Image (cartoon, rainbow, N blue to C red):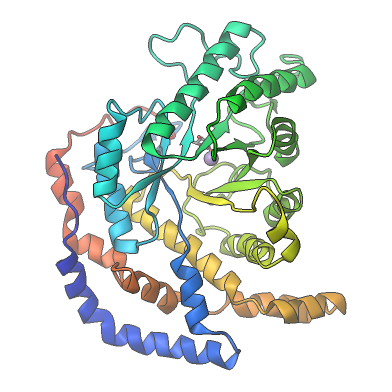
Length: 436
Ligand code: PSV
Ligand code: MN
């Protein structure tokens, strides 16, 4: 069993070496922020409450349509993935929950997995169903759709699978189901565009009625792929129609990579907040399409602007009064085809936290005033001033206070974790293609 956590005394040792320079850096940024009238204590309190879930499928090496080049020590079992997730959380102290994909991560003994997770300081976030691939032994094929299929039997199978995901999630302590559908078509005429959506809504109503109390259902949109002509849940508008048709436990999930080029994603977020149907996020970044690149690696300003909407909404009395409560879930959904997945999950979580922290620095009163007076330059300057502040020492301080590493990447590399698990875990096949 590859249960190698990184010993906390090693983390402490490395922290001690870095502590003096960290204190100096922290004093520097604290001075700047205090001059702006920002309370460091309030900032650190908000950061202490911020968490992001990690994807179980993000710990294996991803690939492209053309090939996959595995890294040594890739996790093979769900247990392996939990050990990797625990390392990320132990060092960054930011990711205490794991989001599972079924059947990729179907636990053979859910109670034992829940116990193992707890012993590693982890819990479970949203469950993800998978009706975009056929599974061995399955009686119907999803080649022409799942919840939208013309055949009632296929729809039944897809509904049952989603209900099974809820049941597994219930045993694990999860509280949400994320539904992403590959349903759509690659050629005009293939599908009746309106009826396909009617069938998805009908099927999801059955899934919705199986949600236990306190659970939420997230509907995730995506414009294309695998369908290259039409996708049934192609954008936030359709996703919102679905959520509204289902009921208050249903809301929309925004995967940052699931938009056509140049979409104003922060405005999509603002609209979903206005409709009180923003359920959560799949964070990643993209240059061309659904590239699943590391969060903040291509468009860090966009990530900041998304958090700017979230921080603004959290302080808005209208949003605060809304029922069901505005409480979006934060999850990472990435594929790592070149980087060590464990390093990238960890660093991406920190980039997301960085965007949140910078959004907390926005002088909202000043911004509102400039907006009222239509002072475009000053309004933008307020945002830029927050965005350009180096908040790294505040993030490091948050980790340190929670028992994590000042520099988690160096701590991880020095720990020799990857080499240790490489000795234990069998090598997974390399040449075949595969996104995840
Ligand atoms: C689809 O591209 C997606 O974003 C969905 O969230 C899936 O569940 C995930 O990727 C994993 O393939
Ligand atoms: Mn996603």
